[in-house]
Image (cartoon, rainbow, N blue to C red):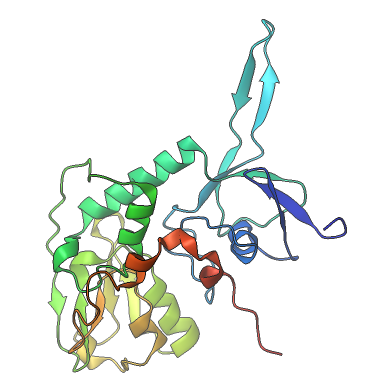
Length: 256
């Protein structure tokens, strides 16, 4: 490892390749950093902030001999390039508390009633909540009122659960080359839309096999006639915590 470029993640030496971000290098090395909007096949987005880390914190000694830790700068690990010798903190209490708060805000902002959602057990938001020990929503429920779009013959959109990660937007643009989805509005009016004259999914050229139709981390984009097919106890995160297999989120290497 002496000739490879490395940085330190929670004091563990992590090798990286030129051009990799912190999260890409960490996941490639088998170290999980929580995230929602990062996807190994798409350009980093940096919107969910779940992958926030602290970089190059330092400890100084005061005049009275006390050791004081000066927090490093906070940064999204999905958009921050890995640099040789940098010290990155991820699994420290203040960062984990921030992540729990972000999860709680997402849970109350949308209608995330897990028992009634067919994505339950394989939902990344739910999986992260379990993994980070989120025991309650903490904040008042927002009770958002959003439409359900059932106009497509094979795919249903339940906008009530959208977390604005834009994975479907990027998948449709970068992989499917269709631009079926987009984001409209700002602030609390920001929401997912379909690019058709009617605004309905049924009037787009989305196919059930498209990447965009299969990348939603929560229960917004659902396939009709396929509800609750996997029994409790056998679902994806029933078997192992979301953090248990970092390699599945590692960057995809281009085929030569």
